[in-house]
Amino acid sequence: MAIQTRTEESFTPAMRTEALEDILTERGLVDPKVLAGLIKNFEENVGPMNGARVVARAWVDPEFRARLLADATAASAELGYKGAQGECIVALENTDRVHHVVVCTLCSCYPWPLLGLPPGWYKDPAYRARVVREPRTVLAEFGLTLGAGVEVRVWDSTAEVRYLVLPQRPAGTEGLTEEELAALVTRDAMVGIASVAAPRR
Amino acid sequence: MTAPAAPPALQGASAPPRSNGELVFAEPWEGRAFGLALALHEAGTFTWKEFSTELAGSIARWERAHPADEEYSYYRCWLEALESLLEDRGIVDRAVTLDRAVHLRERPAGHDHRHDHHHDHGG
Image 1 (cartoon, each protein chain N blue to C red):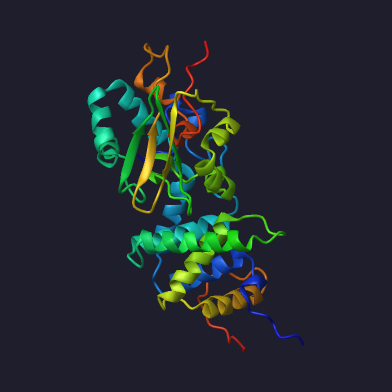
Image 2 (cartoon, helix red, strand yellow):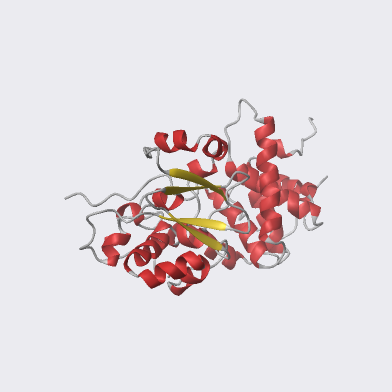
């Protein structure tokens, strides 16, 4: 009879995860209820709509905007958005002359309380490497073409500092309510790979 | 804000995950692996910087090796990082996890997966 191999490769990640969870809960290091709650929260509740509300508030309330640019963690907490990976958030304001785009070159650091967990492309090795080397090309591939007069700044997230891009408010939205504005703001715009489009008429 | 339902204006692209059709985790184990790391961090077992450093190392190792037949899996790197950090801290040895995985694999079909009564691991 063949000796059963006990290397990582002989188990799927699902089996290894189940085994680890079994041990950690058995030893009382992880509370199954806490675990279930954390997963559910990120699967269902936390997402880019939080950041969109922050952006819309900044567009309509200049004092909030100033507080956001001074301390995005505190300003976000005013709207109730705080928690893991939101301890130090910096807001980057796009203007006619500067466009910000965010990456995490080493892993996937991201402002969870405002944007939820990152999408696949943000974690992809190609995006992480290329957006630093050739940001304009990468942005164009995402469908965002910037004029030659616009400076592109790429920000590398870390475990300590996460970034939120404050996109430019689109022209022609003067009559919209804060809630209507929030509905225009996409995750891609808050990472800096898109701009916010005015609503179609 | 914990209400799962978004106000009507925030449906579509800005709706919460899942309700807008987006799955945060492609497979259930990814969510479990994610949740285990976060739960351990919140319980004070390690700092997030320690975990993310380990994660970055795990991702860099995969990128260097870049197995041609293997698609990049972020959560596979995440699990590696978690196992590695727990082993380095002397909290859970990888061999113990693999023994448990063998044990879970050999349980009878339909058996409850909770390890609530003892079997002889049988070497």
